Image (cartoon, rainbow, N blue to C red; front, side):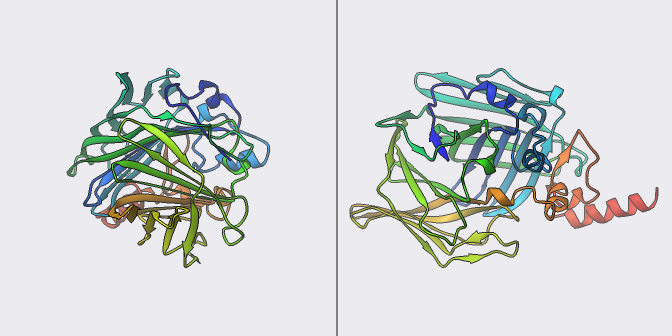
Length: 375
């Protein structure tokens, strides 16, 4: 289901040529006030409409033919700006190492003396706003190094790699000419890649989370091969120190507090707890309302508590829930298309409701309806 990969080596370039596979890079910046951003640049992002349904039907697309860029901006725990833009393949390049171009957006990775620097010059189209999302993001953190034995969960190849952890970042964005947004704080950067489709990896439900506690990054995966209600999920935790040394924890006990279903039918809980054999609270995520609430994906900015000896720390962290079998189902696909802009097909009429600034989206949608009626 998941294999820890070597951060000192680039992700295999051939993955973007594997039918139905995927490769994505994840970057998160979050401060203590719950403000920040998430940016994902990808080839074959499983969440793109049509991608996984074609794979299930045996007509797999190549990841390199479905490149996309996603940016979500949060202010005090609220999603205030969103764009997921799919580009023409000819408008995207990756050198197989540390340089990407998505349209006018340039992303560069540079390694120096054990530190990884990621520089993003952001210039992403936002059709619903009539002006692009522009800005700069700068990240610096140690290049993680694996200590001990390799970590593998399951048999299928899914390479997951912390790429710069624990890190610090600054971001200054121009939100499509309407307002400025800036943040400086803790950063987390990883990557995921596989020659297989996400729902072919044997994962029924995926819960992932992380936070910076006790001078280290604590990261965990809980994976169920079947439905979330059944059995005990497989769990592995990781402790990454200030120098980037990774220690795996395979001895954690999982406690999921008050299981329930969301409006769209996704599994969720009031809290997720990971406990050491000595009874210490290694990680507790208290889940408020999700900042991204969909039919196959949930994202939380959560309150995290962790213990080390007599020292108990609280901070802000992140947690995601994914059910791969629910991705790109026909019943949900029209809703997903409303949220994804594309250069390769006609965009949804309802795109202004979901793309760009969210505080004035109803006014923009009304203007869009009036303009369409006048044509």
